[in-house]
Amino acid sequence: MIKYFHAHRVIREKCMGHMTCMRRCPAEAIRVIRGKAVIADELCVDCGTCISVCPSKAVVAISDIFEGLKKYKYKVAIPSPVLYSQFEPSIHPYIIHMALKQLGFDKVVDIFFASDTLSVVIEKYMDDFKGRLPRISSHCPATVRLIQVKYPDLVELVVTLDAPREITAREIKENLPIELGMDPDDIAVVYISPCPAKIVSIKQPAEKARSWFDGTVSMNDVYSLLFPHVIGIKETFDISMVPDDFYFSADFTTFAGKNWSSRIGNRLVVTGVDHVMKIFDDIENSRLRNVNFVEALTCMQGCVGGPFAPENPYIARSNSYKQKSLYENIADLDERKIIDQYKNGYYNLENPVLPRPTKYFDGDLVTSIKRMKEKNKVYQKLPQIDCGCCGAPTCIAFAEDFVRGETELMNCIFLSQKVNLNNWADRENNQ
Image 1: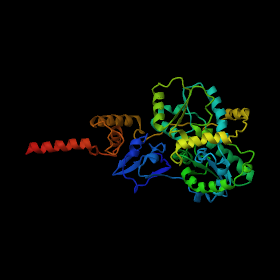
Image 2: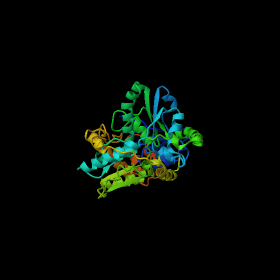
Image 3: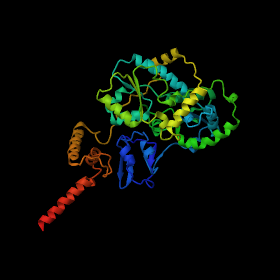
Image 4: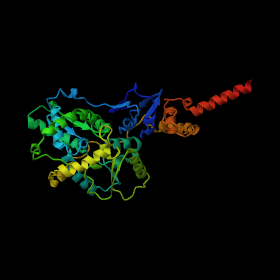
């Protein structure tokens, strides 16, 4: 079984066994065992819901810390566009670039150019594509993992194009060492992430051997360090400090993935993991008609709703709209060059997205069928009310755990009471 990396963990000392995370986890990856939440690695899709809903704040992020980046001679920050929306619109985006350099980064590169480029590519991709519809964007890694775990029949619908952040990092890793005359191993490309899923997509990509990034840090960690620098720089900032080639576009954070799907007809944008799953249910059951392209983001309101983004997502979106009106500066694209690169596979994923084997039914067919029959048999004995008292989110999940030998039937309080009552009746009859 593959060992999966995750960008969050449970602090057992803080976990109070509230079961909120267990009930809200869309992948049913959490069990509460002896009063503590336990995450099943192979089922977790890194959507970050458990981080957001835990009343004890016992689920925390795991990300690279700045200390680990000191070994590199040159450090490049690639912030998620969400970072800008965390600040009020009076803060010019270039101030944030300056503040990141004060934190120790030598260069700051945005993904706006790559996302605009992908808007051209995805349009061409959809024009050329003749297979099963709708296609599902590969931009949100939590969505991709949700498909791998919960909707394996839909993996063939995932668009086989890489994400803007990876394209940006690759171009830096290929070109900057030549430009600076440095050893590539001395240059670190670091992503500032609003969610655990993007951290995991860098630490353990679903569709390639390794990411082009050398590290990643959570936006929360960066924001707390960045804020005083931003305020300090703002006091003396003058618009003349902004380079002529500074490129800014806030569209990426206003709802979905930039305008890379805006020129596609019959597209659908959905946010929030519950809503995403409803759409995927509809696709599985052939109820979603007349839609060619689905942009599905598991965080409510899109990436601004990421668990590592400190600002209220509604305020962040409002900030983005205002920043767009104040600072937008769109670069000209060489569409002919982009199309040529696309035809040469420059933007393609290295490998296709495949279903993720899970510990429940990843054996041979005979074993899987045997387990499914046993699971259904156990399920019929259960009250089927999904009370969660056993520590599993549903009775079906409890039955699966039992088949795996990870729980006992007596952990169901209703079965336990029934057995105790029968034992009591037997004793009464024997007296």
